[in-house]
Amino acid sequence: MPPKIGFHKSAYAQGRNENVFSILIPSWNNLDYLKCCIQSIKKNSRYQHEIIVHVNEGKDGTLEWVQHQGFSYTHSKENVGVCYGFNSPASLATTDYLLLSDDDYYFAPDWDFYLVEEIKKLDHIYFCLSGTMIEHSPTQYSSMIAPHNFGNTVHEFNEEKFLKEYNSFPFENWNGTNWYPMLLHKTIWNLIGGLSTEFTPGMGSDPDMMMKLWHSGVRYYKGISQSRVYHFTSRSTARVKKNDGNKQFLLKWGLSKSTFFDMYLRLGQPFMEYTPEPDKEKFKNKLLRDSLKRLLTVWKKG
Image (cartoon, rainbow, N blue to C red; front, side, top):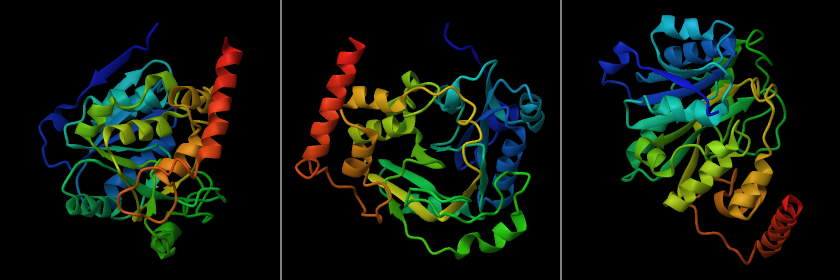
C-alpha cells in the first residue's frame, strides 16, 4: 500500500511573499536536531525563508512542535524515507527556489547570502548549487571541510567556538555537488520529477537526481565554499533499513555511482565553471567494468 501523507500549509506562509528560499527538511523522530537546525536558519540567515518540514512518524513530539511553530508541513505516520520526505513538502513551496536540507545541520552565518549572490551571476536556471559541509570526523570526500570537531552530537555542540572559527578554514569552491544543502530552481525540480521514489528510503537517490539533472541539460554544478554548515552526520540513515542504491543506480543508468562522480560530475574537483561532456575514452575501462557488473547483476536476478 502506498504511504499516506498529510499536507498542511500554514496560513502564515500563504500570506507572505518576502521569502527567498523554500527550505525542505525531512525529519524522523530527530526533534533536538531539527530544533537546532531551524534555530540556526532563523539566527544566521541574511534573508527570510520559508521552512517546510516533512515529519516522518513524529512520535518524539516533532509533529506537535512543528504545528506549534506554524510551519507548513507534510506528515506520514510511518517513515517513508527522504524521497517522499523531500517530494511531499516541495509540493507546498511558494518560492521559486528549493533548498534541500538534512535536519542534522547547523547553518553558519550568511550561508544564504553567498547562494543568492551566485544566483545573481547567472542568466539561467540550469544550475545545481550546494553549501559546504564542515564535519567533525575525517572524510574521504574532498568537497568537505574535515576534520574540525565542534561536537559529535547536538548536545555536545560548541556553538560559540564554531561561530568564531567556521570561516577560518581556507577552502575553494568545488565541482560536482551531490550533497545537501542543495539549491535548485523549482522549474528544474519539476522538470526532473524530484527524487525518484523507487530509491526509497533513499540510498542512491542523490546521484540519481544528479544524473536526471545532467540529462535535463544542467551543466553548472557548484559547491559554494563560503556557504557553510556544520554536519553532525547520519543521525537518521544509521537507523533505517537501507535499499541497495548502488545496485539500483547501476541497473538504471548502466554505470556505477563512482564512475558517474568521476566521469560526469568531477565531484570534489576545483570548480570548473560549466562541466564539460565526459571523455568516454578516458573511462573506457571503468565503463567496461560497469557493463560487466550490470550484466552479472541482471543474470543473477534472472
